[in-house]
Length: 233
Image (cartoon, rainbow, N blue to C red):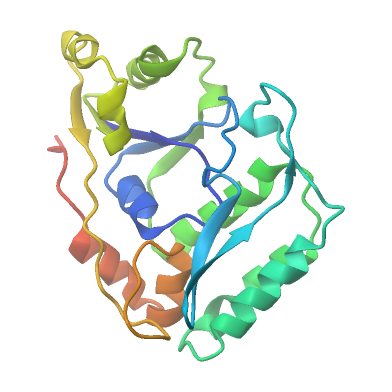
């Protein structure tokens, strides 16, 4: 049983979805403290002279949990995000395949950040043909913090292998995982080069950059690039 865990980010990058694809179960870490200036409420899209951030403004109180973060709807951010996508991807080959979803999304009102993030991620998983089972960490009723929380989530799901981000090297207690029969593999994403609207190629954009430019071929690009981190079976 291969497990990976990550916060539910806003329009995540391609490496996020490779991690999901590599897992049997992907856990959305929704009941941890919100981190300012992280990727939970922002991500980058390609523009003619580089990249730009699309950021959802939020109202944050001290020690707010991620799944309680409310969107600041006093700002007209949906129109900005919608227009930024339309303008910067007008010349892409496949924007038309996904435009209806995003237009409809930005016309709706979301009060909680996690609600819009989850709706986007699940939609993008479908477009990338990813059928990995997903679950919210809040549904597991696991206590603790840091390495102990991650270990307990893995144990609750009978994990044999945990796929960690590179940052995990700084805080995971590797010996604890080993003692519980759980192998840790660190995700080291190699970014593929694909067609973009502008030259030269700029990596680490939201996955919508790939979809709008490559369409259904995005699935093949993701799978061709996927690492074999854990041995299944």
